[in-house]
Image (cartoon, rainbow, N blue to C red):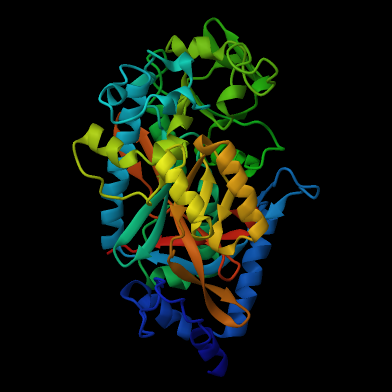
Length: 486
């Protein structure tokens, strides 16, 4: 019993003002976690440590790794996995789902408008300069509507929590959101190691995501497609940091995994090499950036794409998911206008608020940010993966001085946000449970048939005590995300 108590009693106290998702301020366990805590109190701590080690071994055998670019030791790394689940009640999820669906509908309508009449710019709600200086804006998409009218086929909305009913959108991922394979493998690992947990606690399933993805992509096939559309996943190849996910999803969907060298434009169709010759592809789930898709249209040195593919696409004879040019919505300056964008296209107030954001391109905002750099988080407009950012409260004087110079030299390239008191969830350590900061990336499928939100998503966790950076490339890990079936 002493060992069992250690699992429960070594929980660190959360910092002042920090929302702990498992424990209330008085130390009691919140409703969402009570069945889990009851089960946990019955377990031996040494057995739990063995299970944590077993989980790591499973991930290593499965090959769930990623690459970090730009480092001398850029070999494949194991993504850390924590065996304590992140738990969300059914009521919380229903509220989140309504907000996510509203936002994704607005994003898709926004994409269509930007590449057609640009009514939101004409109305004065969005500055035209945000497109003029946007690297993700593609003139080649102007006037073209993708098959089925869908631009954002797969969307990842990054959410953070700051209180019992306070969820905020941290950023949108409308180009090529990653991480869904880890969501699926996390659940499979938990079910393999703790099957009794899933008989005691009713958790909504996520394992049907690949089937739902295949169905959603097929529903977006062009008119020339057969009754059973051919879907393929386009990968840059084995050296890409997310190659495991590309191969995993293709296998789980029963789709072809292809590289640019496997494809040709023949008879006005994108076709892939097979043992029977070349055969047409109807839907290409691309995990290749826009500039490498077609060397005849974009980067002429690209060996990753298919010469002439954009001509086929604009002729409506292949679907590319997500549509080229959707990276505009990933821009953090555009993000700062999302409340206006949601209201403009839906006629409703946003159900999920943004994090307060200062656009450094605005002189008054820039002055405010420069005066408070040690208090704020500063991000590059096109930055990702936790790179190119400053976390003021944990930065050195030298780092702050460097960012001050960057802001003065190129203010348009940065936005700033307050340092949020992100919620914490427990992780399992040798000393017992300890709170760590988390975020959540739900995955959304969009087709002419509707919007499909997988219950849960990928919870990323900052494994270092006090850290706010959850990205795996920066030392973060993942958890299984449970949505209770209640």
